[in-house]
Image 1 (cartoon, one colour):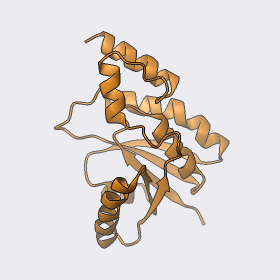
Image 2 (cartoon, one colour):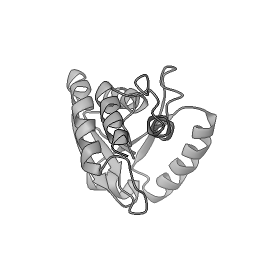
Image 3 (tube, one colour):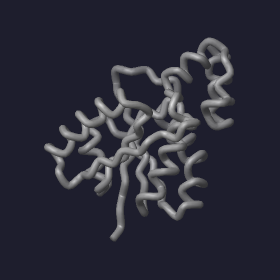
Image 4 (spheres, one colour):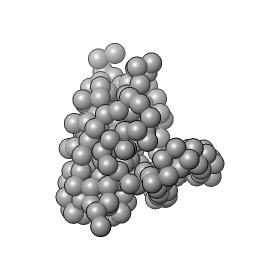
Length: 166
């Protein structure tokens, strides 16, 4: 049986925490769809196209090594609707701590009520990635800090270039 998993996020920027989740998700499915949420009210650091390019460059080698087909899409509606469009049967959600679990359980309950055939799977962050958030990475980078411990090298370089322009 073939399984398509759907992992949604802003990925602004792609962090080592995201890569950690993507590697774990690749072990659960034959096809992994990385879905970049695009919200008109938010101004991201990287455009959706830039985020998609970074995800492909960073994550395709991981997926290939694990025998998983990787796709990157964008969406601006409900996660469950985007997941249905690509034929996903698994929603991947990462957990860093108990606070994440409380929130994610509420989401999983709502999603299950609306789309019972879409199974939410929680993946715990590894200890080395547990503290990483894209929000904190953006804040540190914007203030000229070194984020190289939290993001892949290409992302660190692009963040430096992005914030040097401001």
